Image 1 (spheres, rainbow, N blue to C red):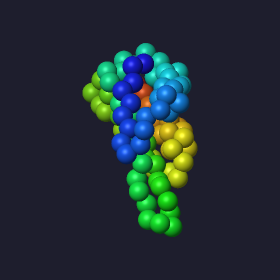
Image 2: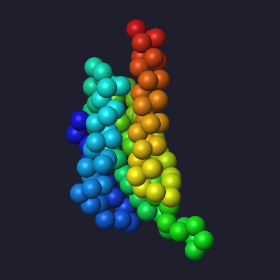
Image 3: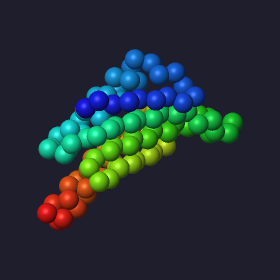
Length: 104
């Protein structure tokens, strides 16, 4: 799957890029024969107040036929946010497959 990764207010290192790519590649087993038209992932550092420190946001947009599957999560750890996006996106893909099966 070809993924476009964007970083806002943080440096997109090779480690972050590879981690995002690996996690999104894990979703292919849930997709099966569904054609992915576009996949965008955005990671961002949100400045919290002095007590909370930095908060990270991860967002994934998966364009499939007739729909866009979108998931966004925020966490104190960037890698944890990416993991949560992957897990929630897997659930959204399962629901999409059930919905499309009901149409047929």
